[in-house]
Amino acid sequence: MSRKRVLITGVNGQDGSYLAEELLARDYEVFGLVRRVGLEAPEHRLERLLPLLDRIHLQPASLESYAGIFNAVAKIRPDECYHLAAASFVSYEFDDEFSTLTTNINGTHYLLASLKDLVPQCRFYFAGTSEMFGSAEEMPQNEQTRFRPRSIYGISKVAGFELVRNYRERYGMHASSGILFNHESPRRGHEFVTRKITSGVARILAGTATELRLGNLDAERDWGFAKEYVDAMWRMLQQPIPDDYVIATGKLNSVRDFVRIAFQCAGLDWEKYVVTDPNFFRSGESVALCGDATKARQVLGWEPKKQFEEMIREMVETDCLAAGVALPAATL
Ligand code: GDD
Image (cartoon, rainbow, N blue to C red):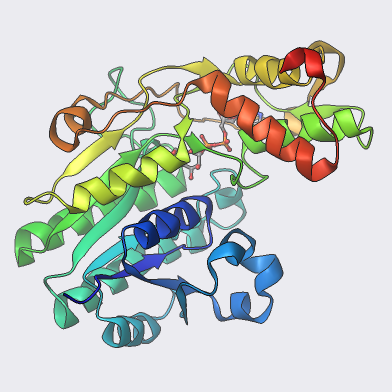
């Protein structure tokens, strides 16, 4: 039997790189969609993919071009497609909410329309997000909870989610959405709070920084481990029937909890280094969101395994290694 062909958008992101690894291990032929500029400086722009570059195919295309997406799909003819690419940092959207909205919605639409016309049997995954719940009316949130997004990014994802549902119901496509709560790892982008904290700890330990400036320490999130979350994506596409699933740990922690544990890993007292900076506060941000992944556990046999503390330690260790410092022996 020939190898299954998979197309991943956002392949050079945190989730895309973990997913590419998992699918290579499952003997898929992996095609990643990247911006053309990424191919010009792979050592910088495709850093997370460097260990995989000789085993995956990179296809340059922009999500802003229907013709580009259509041609990429025509060339690859995937059996499965994971659509992970999006403008995804909640704070930046305010810089240009028009482009966040149009890029995220059109990219999803172009991809779905191309797959429907060229390879309608292709199974499709859409990266939804807890940001779609926004100011949710109930806690924890599950697949039945009403969406009340409070950010342009969240609104763009609700639109994408509805497009997916529409293509599934109208054209019978095997299209599913994962509603993923925050998920982190040593590969997380530095703009997100968890990586900002762990890399900040490493810099303080290495003596190249003396403080860490953060926003709201009372903000709470349901943080899981990214590598486990991409496994949930794969499981969704192996189901006989396409559907939508919440993927979450069901546990809330505050930014302060994360900070305390990360500094503890390095044998440091966080209160001596962390400075609260109003520039990093967000107005009108989503209330604390906590997911109920019962359906994923029952149908997909998926459940989160890595503990919060263990994940933080792994992130601090990786950043310390990169900064050239070892964690104090007493904390190991
Ligand atoms: N980034 C950042 N920087 N966040 C801070 C800071 C800071 O200095 N200080 C406090 N926070 C708070 C934010 O206000 C927010 O409540 C929380 O930390 C987490 O922020 P992020 O790590 O930036 O993630 P996010 O929750 O906004 O969004 C992430 O998760 C969503 C759900 O999965 C992103 O990955 C989204 O793309 C994703 O949809």
